[in-house]
Amino acid sequence: HGIVLSWIVPALVALLGVTAYLLFRKWPKHPPVAIPDRRELTSAVGGEYVIGLVSTAVPLALPLLVVHELGLAANAYFSVPWLFATSLSLLMWNVASILLVEAANRPDQLSALLRRALRMSLLVGVVGGLGIWLVGPWLLSLLGPEYAESSAWLLRLTGLAAPAVAVVVVWTTAARSQGWLRRVLALQLCVGVGVLGLSALLLGPLGVTGIG
Image 1: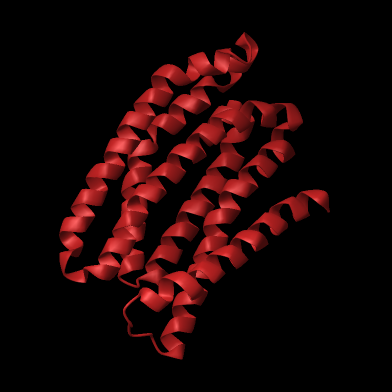
Image 2 (image 1 turned 30 degrees about the vertical axis):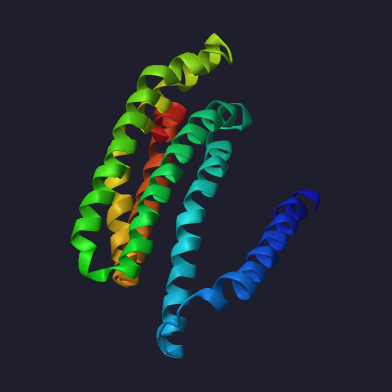
């Protein structure tokens, strides 16, 4: 229960703090905006919730799949490269989320915002992926030569995939700004099924590198 509480308690404190700040400091100074009707709001919130579940389930399921197929030792070789990959992906999501906010305020400039977000995300993906490819194996060697030998190619492949991830991230963010939640959910399901299915097939012959 301690691990669960260590996640829930800080999240609850943050939720209460942010809510209080918005209610008493931010919203009273904000100009009034049109609120969607109940049906539209319920559809949007429900769609975002399901999309969040799917997008969160895949990264959490991969370590379990590695443990099930290859054991705990293999998961140790998997964890650090996966941490690099998810950190770079999170950075690209944060960059692209700027598009979502700006598009809500300036919907007439969506095309220009989309191009700018794509350039920024690709820059992060290319530079970050190149850095992972070149410097990542050396960083892994700090954990020992055996660790670097077992994990280096998984790390390189995640870096190689970073520019493609940037494109998917920007498209997903643009689709969310337009309310195309069913398309986003369909994409997330396809990516999730593809990643988990191919990982299950390739873990046996290729080891943890098969996830890359």
